[in-house]
Image (cartoon, rainbow, N blue to C red):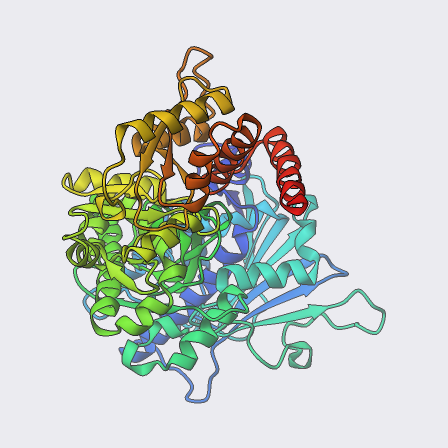
Length: 621
C-alpha cells in the first residue's frame, strides 16, 4: 500500500532555507544522521532495560556508513528502535517535531537523559544539503510491525510505501547530488565522520563499495566489505573518572586527539554532575612562542557528539590557547547544535572552567613547586594572558604567578619584594632583553642586586596590570634607574661640569643630560638611562603605530658616566687633547648606546670606523 502527501510545513522553500541558513557547516548532515542512528540504538537499549522490548543477548549494536561510488549514494544504517509508517508521519513529515523530546517525555519517569543526543526534528533534513533524493527504509521493534519506506526528492512532496527491510532498524539512503559530490570521496567522508563522531557512544563502521567491475554487490549486509574495527572511540578517556586514568592514557589521548607529537605539560580532568553535567580534559601544551602564533583547540561535545571548536560563550577566551575536550549534555543549543544561546547557564559553565584551571595552577604551585617552576616559562604567557582577560582568574592565581630572576631561581612577587626590601623597597627591577641589557645585569650582580626577567611581549601589559592592582609596587627596567646601592661618594661639582661640557661639545648635543657618578663597579664607563614612563610611552606609540609629529619631544635620555672607570679617568686627564678626547667621548657614548638599544645604520657604520681608528692609535704606541 502506497501513500502520497505533502510535508507539514508552512513554506515551500524549506529546503533552500535549510541548505543556506539553518546549518553553518555543509558537512553537518553526517553528524545529524549518525547521531540519529545512535539515538535510535540507545532508545532501543533503554526500552530493553526497562522491560518494554526484548533484546537478543548476542546482538552487537552498531552504525554502518556505506559509500557506493558507482551509485553515488551514502547510506547510514542502524539496528536501533526503527519506525512504523505512523512514526514516519509524525517524526519526519512534521518537520519541527523532535523524536528525542517526545521519547523523553513518554519515559521520563523510567530513565535519565544522559545518552539521548537528539534535540531537534530538523536534524534529518540536513541530508538534503548533500542529496537530491533521500530514502528511509525502516522496520520498527514493535511486534507485528511492517517495514516502511519513505522517499522525498527535496521538494515538499513525499511518498510512503511498504519497505524491504527484514531486520529491526533504519537505513537512510542519500542519492548524492551536485552539492554533495565532495562527500563521495572516501577520505572526505571518513574525515567528516572522524570530526563529528569520533567519540560517539555506538561503534561506527565504514563500508566503501568502489566503482569497479568486480564490485557487483551493493548490499549493506556484505560484512566482508566492512572494516574490521570501528572508526570511533565509544568510551573516550574523558568519560572516565580521573582515578581510573593513568598518565600514559592521558598522554596517548592527547596525541590521538590533537595530532601533536609533543607531550603536554600537564592536564586538568573535569568531572562535574551538579549543578550541571560536564566532563572533559584540558591540556597545557608548550606555549613557547609569541601569543600570535599559538593556536589552541577546545573541542566542545554534547553527549559525545562534536558541536564546534573554541566556542567563546562556553570557553573563556584566554583558555582557547589550550587544547582540550569538553562534553556538556546540558548546553542549550539551537536547532543546528552549532551555536549556543547566551544565558546565565552558559556563564556558570565558563566560570566553573576558569575556577578549575586556577585551582589546578594554585595546587601545583603549592604542592609540586619543583615541576611547576620547570614548565613555568612554557605556561607563563597563558597565565598572564588569562590575568589580563579575566579579573576573577587574576584574583585566584595572582599569588601563584612566579618570575625567573637574574639569580637563576623563581620567586613570587611577594618573595622578590621581601628579599630586596632593604635595597629598593617596593621597586621591581626587570630585564626585557638579556643580551641587550647584559651590562646592566652584570652591574646589578656585582652589587648583589637582582632583577626579574620579563622578556615576552605580553609582559609589558601584564606589568602595568600588576601596578594598577597594587599601587605600592613600581616596575623599573634595569636601564631606567640607578639604585642608590650602586652609587659611591658624590662627585665634585667641577668634575661634573667638566665632563658634561666635554661630551656635549664632542657629540654636538647641547641638550644632552650628562650625569657623573662614582659607581662602586669600575667595569662600566657609561650607560644610558631612560625614564620608565617615557620609554613605556614610546613603546606604546610604536605598538599602535602612533605618530604625533615633529613637535612631539623625544624621550629624554640621560648619559651616566662612571668616574671610577679607568677610561673616564683617562678622558679627564686628556681633556686638553681635543682630537683624542672627542674620539673617546664618541666611543664611550656609542658603547653606552649599544648596551641600551640597537644603533641606527649610520651610527653603526660610524662606530665601526671609529673602533678601527682607536685600534690604529693603540697599535702605533
